[in-house]
Length: 364
Image (tube, rainbow, N blue to C red; front, top):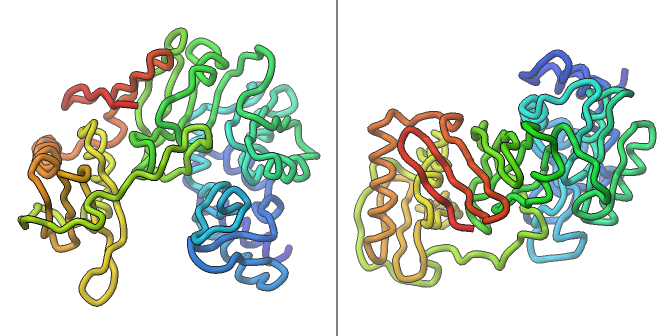
């Protein structure tokens, strides 16, 4: 057994999942699917396996995602991830949420490194099938080269041709508006596991475990927090970070600092209960270094929440809306993410979040 094989065995042992999913992971070492060039950081040079095999191996067998393409394959001032291998535990959770098992026909949106597709192929077995669509021709070609020994069909594009109906759909990219063709290509009551993006750019992308409920409609709980890159068809102009280049006109305080909001996984639930309010996180100079800042609002009405709970702001509306949502969630004991249900009407584009706290329609 090589060092890489031992690292893969240790990774699969760390997974909190079913025996069947762990066995499928065990059959497909991650290092067999990751490209030789990866991007460990959003800044700096890529890491080439030939130049630093130990560093490459550490990145591949971390519990985190691995960026396998940046900037759509072009150069750029930053290494913006545009294709990746998802974090292993997140992969396992999404596969379990989709209920993938022997004999099923599974549609994957976003082939990426092909590791997830290979694991799906092991789970469905010889009587099942996996069709994986990849919008980037170069990424699709890499995936096909890794999947020759499986029953996975890799389709370059956004949706397979034809009218085949699938038993489950798993998306490895986030969408603000769930495409109608995704809902229509699965059978009645079939599961669609999709990272949902409340905003067109930035922000959290919680995973929704939906079931098709009718023509163009689906509904289901939000199962866990996540951070996925956007479906390339739904990329918008980068949303302006609230308060950029503007002076604060007043100061106040908030019950929690920015780090606490992030560490306690509360920010996603605040996003879900504040439809129409843009909420972003960005690094800003703080004391002798940098720190995350939670930013709210738009150009003429914004607020920044700092690590110590201090607030700098211009206007009052954004902070008032955010504070009211925080108070409501605090009074309710911060219900878990799974208590929020996403309802999708792909025809109208209406995406509704329901919970014991009320109903919120999110604009798309």
